[in-house]
Image (cartoon, rainbow, N blue to C red; front, side, top):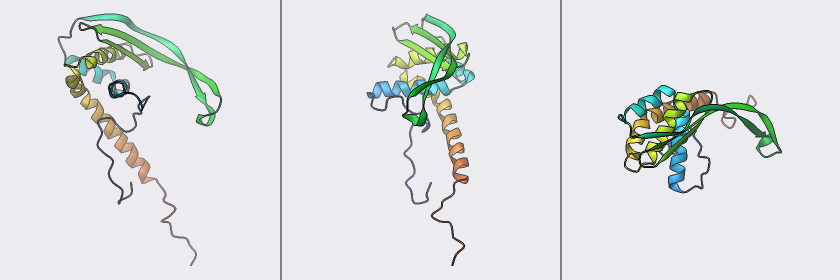
Amino acid sequence: MRPDADPPAASPIPPDILLPDPDAPAPTAERQATMALLARATREELESAVERFAPLPKLRQLRAPETGLVMVRGRIGGDGAAFNMGEATVTRAAVQIGNGATGIAYLLGRVPEKARAAAILDALWQDEALRIAVDDALSPIRRRLTTEQAAATAETEATRVNFFTMVRGED
């Protein structure tokens, strides 16, 4: 960052997590950001967050964690014709808590425990009374991701070449 540039505004969402639909209504965008955070968390972090809500409200397992394949599509140059790039393994789960909130999770990889924990946290987050507590339980994950992003940004910045400030060898 240039020394004269304004520092970026503080955000509870790490800057590298992009919302799938930036024009979505606020509650939808908040849930999308929370689900993106759950996807980036480790299994241990999610299980630790779930343990903070013990004893859990009554859970109904709508879809047991299951692993399958999805087709990954790409576009040349980002806007060319779509093509099938390959397949990716995905684990999905769905739970419903006592108040009727349904939590879902789709995660890359074969991670059934992580998918179940993410679905539980998604369902708990949808309960207005628990939302602040869930956000608080997820704050260590948010801090870790922000720290990792800052380290990656600093590493990238250290290798940046600013051609406008380089001195030419000519007189």
